[in-house]
Length: 51
Image 1 (tube, rainbow, N blue to C red):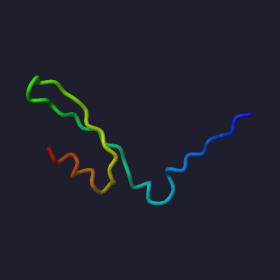
Image 2 (spheres, rainbow, N blue to C red):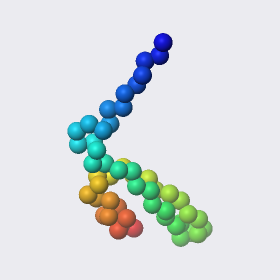
Image 3 (cartoon, one colour):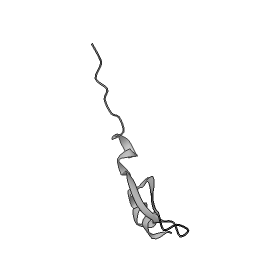
């Protein structure tokens, strides 16, 4: 029988992280791309504020 895997990411200080996705426009060909990053919840506004 297969064992059940238990996720341990939600223990301790790891709960304060979140994944943010930002859409960025390329000035050369006007195409959009996505920038993904895992940041602390307190730094989410800083991530979206910088270019």
